[in-house]
Length: 232
Image 1 (cartoon, rainbow, N blue to C red):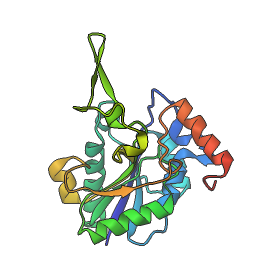
Image 2 (image 1 turned 90 degrees about the vertical axis):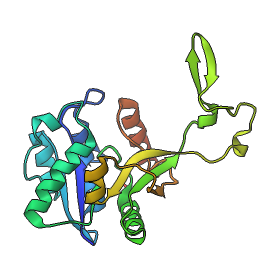
Image 3 (image 1 turned 120 degrees about the vertical axis):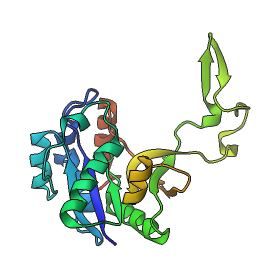
Image 4 (image 1 turned 30 degrees about the vertical axis):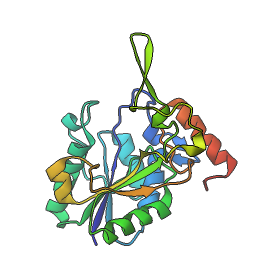
C-alpha cells in the first residue's frame, strides 16, 4: 500500500494569525502533524502544501517534503480543500507514480497522534480503500439544537429531544477534522471527503480531537498539554 500524507498549511489565517508555525509544546504547530505520520510503513512521503515561505521552512526542518509554494488561486479564503489536494496529488503522482490513497492531516489537529493515523490506515486497507474519516462525540446533541425564526425557537431536528435525559439520547457524532483518507479516484470523481461509503474512525478522547482555529482553542490545547493528558 502506497499512501501520500498531505498537510495543507495556508499562510493566511484571520482568526489565529501565524498559527501553523506558532510554538505549541516547544515546536511549531505543523510539526505535530508531520511527526504523527513520519516513519509509518505505507506512507511514501509527507507533503506540505503551503503558500508561505516560513511555513515551508518549518515543515522542511521537521522532515516534510515542500517541493513548491501553492499557487495563489489555491491559497485564498475561498479555495476548497479538495482542489488543494488534487493539485498536490496530480504533481506527486506525475513525479513518483501512482498511490493507493491520500491521507489528509490538517495541522490544526495536533493531538491525533501516530496511533490514530495507523488505525486509519488499517481501516482503509481492511475496507478495500473506502473513505475513512475521523469522528468525535458531538459536544451538543442535535436533538437539543434549535433554530430561531422571528424571535421563536423551532427544533432543528423534527420532533426534537427536549425532556429527554442526556443519558437516554442516541449517540451523536461529528467530523472532527483530524484525519481523512481517500482513494485518488474517489477524490477526483467526487471532490468530497465525506460520502455514504465512509468508514468512521471514532476518536473517543476529547483531548486528541482538539481542532485549533481560535485563540481560546489554542489556550485549551496548552492547558491539555500542561495537564499531562497528551505527551508533549
